[in-house]
Amino acid sequence: MTPELNEKIWLNFIAWLPSAPPSDNPLTLMQAYRDTLFAAGLSREDIHGHLDTIKREMRVRTDGWRAIFNNIFTAGGGGFSTAPNALLVSAIVGRRAGRALDAGMGQGRNSLFLARSGWEVTGFDVSDEGLAAARRNASEAGLKIAAIQCGESGFDYGAAHWDLMVFTYVPFRVEDPGFAARLGNALRPGGIVVVESFASETTSAGRRPVDIDPAALRTAFAGFRILHFDDVSGTPEWTREPARLVRMIAERPA
Image (cartoon, rainbow, N blue to C red; front, side, top):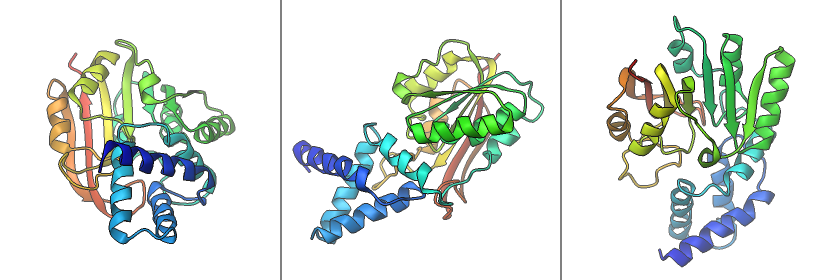
């Protein structure tokens, strides 16, 4: 497809989002858009091309994420886990609490768990609905968290500031060497990065915006001490259907 057609496909999707039906996860939202394209008379081949273009654009464009996750976080469905991430739970066992960053915090499930465990927690997200729920959940639990509305590119990670950073199912380029270096600079010596998401090779067709290439991830964090690394089939925290997942705990050398 030409750049002009890609732009048109993307803008049509963005224009549709405010009227999208309530969806409990990104997959059901995309299925609803597929139905919309089918009702508009597009062929199955054209629909497939449109959805692939949208997935590809979502890896580099952020102008749709707020609407997408505001939809999901107000739908009230059960399409995603509200429990703390199991890898994160295991990662802090025996580790002294410090400053933690929850990137793409959503409704705050990981932030609240860390705050209950004695950590000083900051999180950020583009979804104002998700952040409102996180703040409300923290208040009801008598916990203190800092919840900031911004995208990944607008967040200042700082230098030698964090003892823990968690990235679960977020559309950030975690496997990019430059991104990994940025996180290493933001961690204190001995601090850890916890990563979990869907997995696929960079060259795979139809990749989800949150897919991570396991080999590229490991290479990007080669300068870290890898405490845990999995590339397995499992149950994700979004969609709940079995999928290939990558999980990693990486520690900045002291």
